[in-house]
Image (tube, rainbow, N blue to C red; front, side):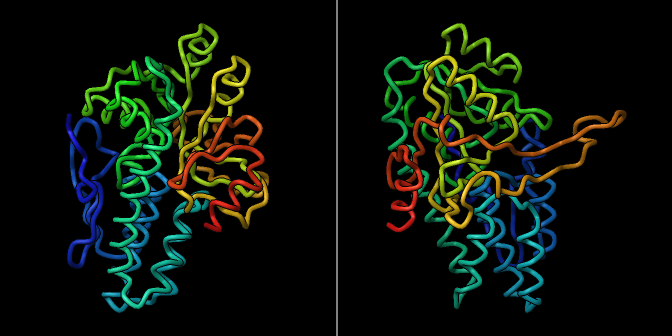
Amino acid sequence: MRVLEPDRILRLEGERVVLLDQRRLPDDEVELACRSAAEVADAIRELAVRGAPAIGIAAAYGYALAASRGDDLNEAFAVLAGARPTAANLAWALREVEAAADPAARARELHAEEVQRCRRMSVHAARLVGPGSRALTHCNTGGLATGGQGTALGALNEAWSQGLLQHVFVGETRPLLQGARLTAWELESAGIPHTVMADAATGSLLAGGEVDCVFVGADRIAANGDTANKIGTYPLAVLADRHAVPFYVVAPTSTIDLGTPSGAEIPIEERDPREVSSRFPARNPAFDITPAELITAIVTELGVHRAPYAESLSGAVAA
């Protein structure tokens, strides 16, 4: 079993932020060196690094880099915060390093803390997986997305290590194929049996009784439990509800935004339509909103939270 070390995914190294360029995976493992906050923001925007926790860490490293260079920190904050508007972790991490006397030290602490949060989340969430389970997941929520062992995919890795998991079905996650490229690569590296499915085929799996649980991550969770995640998550939740399959969201408490009352207030990033079609008119929303009533439980590093989420999530963040 191959372990993806946190420093391999991203790190602050002298006067540069070094990232494993996820645009090149799974074919090539190439590092990208960013030498300014603007270059880190470009890497986030262009998906060289992606996943809500990971882009939060990358932004923190980018801010620390700007501080060490003597750059305008207000400008650095703004350019990094604007790189991807949906993920709550990005703004949270920037506020943390902005308030620190030593931004570089705080950024490294945030990365180390994320590794520990991922570990705790994975253990809590694995308890929801029954023996011999077949799981379905969407997008990529492993080490590549978090800088640790992962959120939803970390939970499935933990369940596999405990002998609970039988198989993982992976939605390809169009248009950029984070499931087919990145999640499949991580599962292959971990030696976990898996099958990549066309996104439109996952409903047939659920209808046919081939899936026992669905695990996804989150980019922002509103105070009422409504959850923004990669486009295509909401249809999975509807289908899971229709076929009585539990639907779990796994994310750190830094993804919970109590200042956003519901999913209606979460900004949805619209990406370049050419990612969908270079010839015909297209729309390319990067995320959708899954209503809280479709979510069986939300798992954070503090444990398993159930409805009413307005109470359980506020208690988690306050803790």
